[in-house]
Structures are given as C-alpha cells and as structure tokens.
Image (cartoon, rainbow, N blue to C red; front, side, top):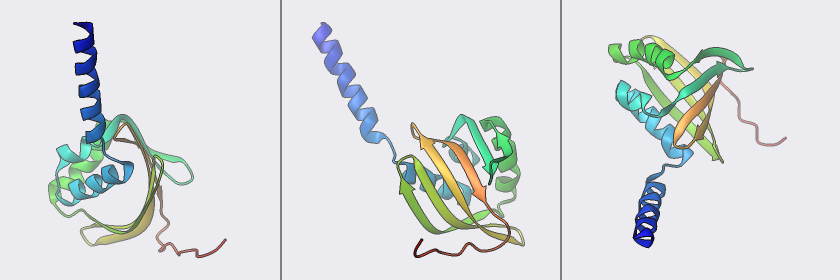
Length: 138
C-alpha cells in the first residue's frame, strides 16, 4: 500500500512539474491577459505578496489586492495595451522592452519581472519618458 501511494504521489508531482511554465511563458501570459483585458487571468499570474516598484526601488504598490485595484481601472475601459519590442530571460528574471498605451498616452519603457513558482513576485519598471537605447558593447 505504501509503495502504491508513493508511486501515485510521484506521478502527481511529475505531472505538476511538466505543466509548470517558464518565467518567460508567465510574463508572456501576463502581456496576453492585459491585452485581452482579462483581469482574472492577469491577477492569477501574480503572487499574493507581489511588489511593484519603479527604479531605483521606489515602491509603487504591493500585494495582489492593491494591484487588482490598479489593473481594474485599466482593464475596464479596454484602452490598455502593451506592445513587446523584445524579451530576455535569465533564471527567474525576464526583462521586457515594451510600450504601454492607455488612451492617448503611449509610454515606452523596460520592466524587469521576477517569477518564482510560476508566479510574478516582483516587477521593477525603468521609465523616464525617453526610449531606452540598446547597448551593443560594454
């Protein structure tokens, strides 16, 4: 009986692991949910204790509930859209160069996402109103 239980547990754990999304897939799903104006799908991608900040670490908001309030107004109007220019992933981090549009406002910028356990745990926005320039060498 113990052997059967152990085998069943291993099968369940391996099935869960095979369904796990990579950090880049999680962030891509976030962009898709925002563009689809699907608040529920969008919020399902964030950890309960998510932290959102603006570089260099200035807090914007924290917690899924507070984030839901921010996103609700954007999603309800149907005007919010994000266009991804490029995406780079390394370990739990995903760096996205994107343009966020809302109504008549269009803001280019960079966002750095940290994804742990299939959920976004931290986002840091780098924005100052100017388009980021690519650096080809150090």
